[in-house]
Length: 174
Ligand SMILES: Cc1cc2nc3c(=O)[nH]c(=O)nc-3n(C[C@H](O)[C@H](O)[C@H](O)COP(=O)(O)O)c2cc1C
Image 1 (cartoon, rainbow, N blue to C red):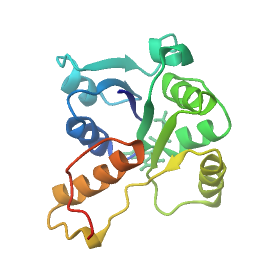
Image 2: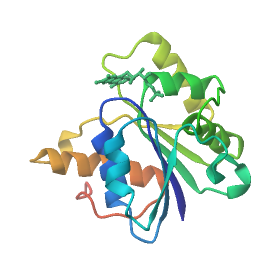
Image 3: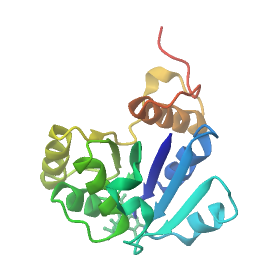
Image 4: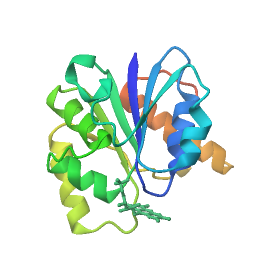
């Protein structure tokens, strides 16, 4: 499976990092980051993650012919969300999202803002209608998580479920 992970400039970059860490090792990961140098540092020596700068609009993943299985933007800023909702592709993150929509591939956005404005909600509604998975990092207390790490695993596990990625990150309700 080939997955693009895009990390935009909202709070919660750590969740995007952990999403990559928990991905099964046989998944091919292509990582686009919008800002943080810390993200680059973490992965520049990893052989399983291919890194792209957000300004690299000619990267392989910018073309539908590269055939990505799933794309996840974690966290997704309101700025990036709005651009995706309006078909703006002015950087690699917004381009890979536009490609996922036009190729009708799985696209998951994890918008992070509180509270949410009517503009953000309208953008999310529009994207959800197109089949985009809108999955903010929302706490789920029924998971009985006792630590922040367990709560993060619950959220990441829910994202993996949406993308069809097998995992054992939380105990399922039974
Ligand atoms: C410390 C800090 C935290 C931020 N947190 C958020 C956030 O949680 N959600 C959001 O939509 N924007 C947040 N922003 C604003 C975005 O970084 C800003 O809108 C930026 O233009 C987004 O660019 P991008 O979409 O290209 O990543 C934050 C900015 C800073 C400096």
